[in-house]
Image 1 (spheres, rainbow, N blue to C red):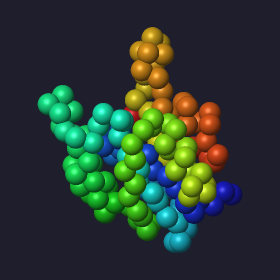
Image 2 (tube, one colour):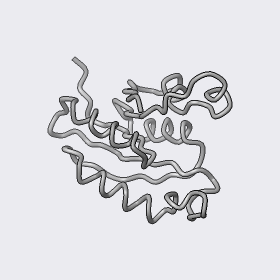
Image 3 (cartoon, helix red, strand yellow):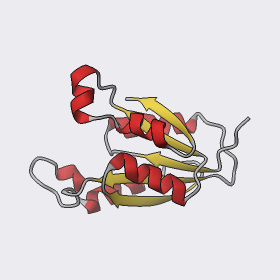
Image 4 (cartoon, rainbow, N blue to C red):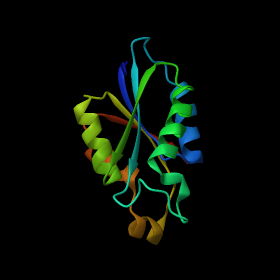
Length: 135
């Protein structure tokens, strides 16, 4: 049985994040496990706009702190800027993660091709196991 000591928990601060955290609770994690709660902002995020008021760095940090209070193991917060899949994979390499927990929006067909799938790219390129939670 695989022991997951370092887990990257990729969150997007939507309902999908709640599902990822609930799924993480279902795992049997050792007492010394550590979760890195990560949110990747795109290059033009980081400041709230009328279209995306939830993406200001301060609001994201507060939301991650709320999520952090729900995690049963020690945890830390990482707010990154860049391509979500690339940053999640980079973070997994830096922390030598045993697992990445990530949600999927369940895009299909043309919409998936146009918008891309962060979870699919992470699964294809991750240096460790990936736990994909359906959104």
